[in-house]
Length: 440
Image 1 (cartoon, rainbow, N blue to C red):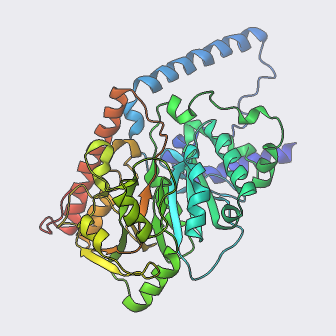
Image 2: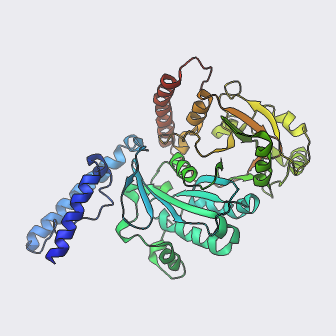
Image 3: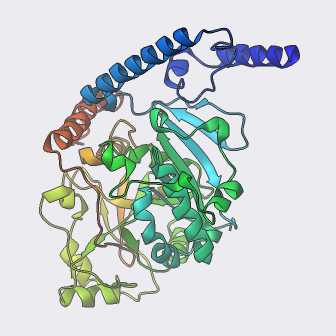
């Protein structure tokens, strides 16, 4: 017993030496508490009762302060220096107030000479994956934000998809991330095999909210940019397409794009944009541009327009003319080259890029709108070209979103993004110069 205690004390000393005081504060919810410190073997029943009342009182005050300082909880979303929190076989990092479990479930195959689709999602978005995987037919790196009870619900959904769909089992690698304060117990973290076995048994560990999700009930923001950066960084291919799961790609993008690269040579500072269209209703999205043009003529596909919920973010230059350009569906070429600063300021295109592209700003949250805009500003400042492809596209499908109806909370999200953007814009302009013609 004395030897075990010595080992515990030695382990704690090593942890104190390797983790900064700030990180210790952030990680206090996930580091197991040494039982020797809080031993109550010699505590009288009266003292134990008084201690319990004091703990409940302190927790009550903490809950009140947590709920009453909602805006403050939006600060420090990301940290550029990951901190290892576990010696488990899984790669676990801390970034700001979030824990990331990278490569928790790996794809069954790892093909070479291909391209990765990277995305950040909620577990409620994962129903789109079978169709997307069937169209993409290549590796996918998916980060799932799953705080609280959403973690178990996400794992149940993931394993169900892997069991039911061969494409997902073979091609999708999964990462999970969540708030430190709403994390599973990492000292009891199970392997994927153990977690997979849980979905076949009646277990209360998968209890979830009867209506909605833990995220929606807690009015938590979706830190999509953290998930996107992880999905990009953990992909194993030179090129990635970063997209959201309610955007379906046209078919055969990978082989056609790789063929395009053979003719274009070194890519340099350029990205390859996939034009975005939107389904007018429900139904099967088009596979090819020929189908897209026909469905547009029939009114089943529409061009993004308007300003509600950032739909203008998908308006791309010369969209009408793009529909008129007809080339064989099996080919792929560049339709138009944009320098972004010359185009619409609100444009937030989805594009294929190399993995070493500037990361997404992790202080921006999904609900705050324009969460990808800072990366585009940095691309502009670095003189990137936006090459719009002619026979590859994305189609936005109808989705059931869980957005908070509280106007004050929504405004808080938007206010947070605006403030964070102002600060970051100043930093970028100081770094690159303000006479470049780039703007937000």
